[in-house]
Image (spheres, rainbow, N blue to C red):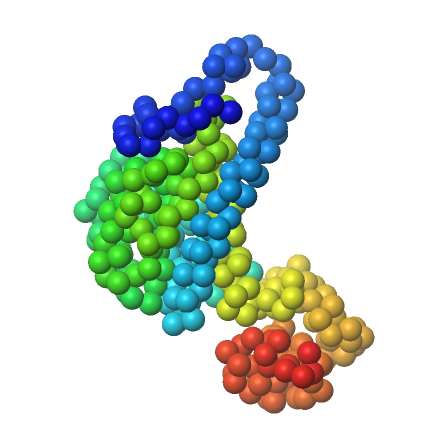
Length: 306
């Protein structure tokens, strides 16, 4: 891969994600299979870029976790594709981790998720107003997402959040991104030029999706939303999830199906409570007290019984 252009300029045409790949000038003449294989091969570049940024990602997650332990929120901010990815990750956290503390600000509001409103990414006044409406404060962590690293809405939002005392993270796909200069914890996953020049919903989009998944998942692990690799805080709101809840309790405890079903019934379907009941051999009330005394962390609630 060629080296990225100098990072001193933030002009759109100078960004690494906007560059062309000379070898792809005949892209439209290639077969469908050849293009598919080309895009699949690009994923190797994605893995390399993410691996290179792993220390930055880990540092940012530790900062997010510190805020969550204070009772704060993980707040994603972005415009266009980046903002939609933030909204998607936030929407997936409640059923998986039983939390309402992962939220997202999308330039143009939630309607911009289904209807493109690209002009709103330049609205810096609305960015500040959106941060104010969410009452961002000094116990929150705000993650600004921008493939280019120069989106005005996103930069203005993290700046305003920082002024309100929040911890800030920036996720960009260009080296030396402007966004990185305005946050406490920059993350730069440099994936390079896209198959279609400038179409950052492709490789850059995949990088952003991975990083956001990683931030929310690892943060939830760190605050006790899992027991080992089991999602013990899921909301069992449909048949599939109720089946998953039974399987999780069985895997965590080794109990027979009839005992699992009884524990879930006695605990009103709360997976964590059912696990503590079965492992510690206590009733639902005692299990609930154990969990309450250990911030809902199953392993801590079990103590020597784990």
